[in-house]
Length: 294
Ligand SMILES: Nc1ncnc2c1ncn2[C@@H]1O[C@H](COP(=O)(O)OP(=O)(O)OP(=O)(O)O)[C@@H](O)[C@H]1O
Image 1: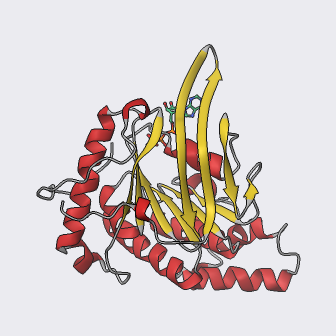
Image 2 (image 1 turned 180 degrees about the horizontal axis):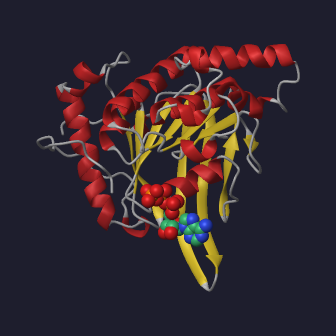
């Protein structure tokens, strides 16, 4: 590919999240696994950054370290100038398994309100936030339903509403749409982009799906195989206004997608120990169907 911008030549930006040399080694039961070797990158305030990498590359591990749910073996995560040592109030996480993250015996409204209870003491303000968040994800009418009465896509909307109601500075999403059908997934992708634009929240989105990463992101971080490093930090120079039909059928989308696909293929065989700091960009025809980084 001719002119792929890498984010090394970054514009000046206001860094909100700084991941500095994060390494994570799991040990126990006579086994040690170096899941993440050395991850360094930053995310600007209000950016939407996607992370793709081969299966087992340590994406979930990284997100847990960022969320303060896991302690890195070495390195540091800094949020707005402060080291993250436990889950920060200004972060919310949406996981893939919406079924397990919602309480079946609580209504939609109660599920969204729950994490707010310790953050917003004023009950009226809490209910306002809950209703605004449900309206923002198109579920205003479902507030009294129970999760099990909703489709998978609707349940994931509830999980997103819960994160949005919390008014986070940073929204972390770990393969949030992996378990829904293709049409629902497209709708939820558009929902994420519209909430991001509307709320000005900073989003870090982990996905296996190469098309999804290019469609959603302003940048895509491509990870190597485990032990993991950032192989490439790619700027997605598609227009800000994106639509499933037009954006995905544009030439630039195909070029970017092709490039990420190719890097992921390389990443599968390249471990952190031998990934170059800034790999070259390359050209070629787009791959066929929706590509997965597995
Ligand atoms: N609690 C744990 N204890 C030991 N090893 C672990 C633990 N969690 C993850 N690992 C190992 O760390 C590596 C990275 O796992 P992780 O789940 O972070 O990768 P991933 O990129 O999110 O995977 P996938 O794409 O398949 O979801 C894997 O080799 C995994 O087996």
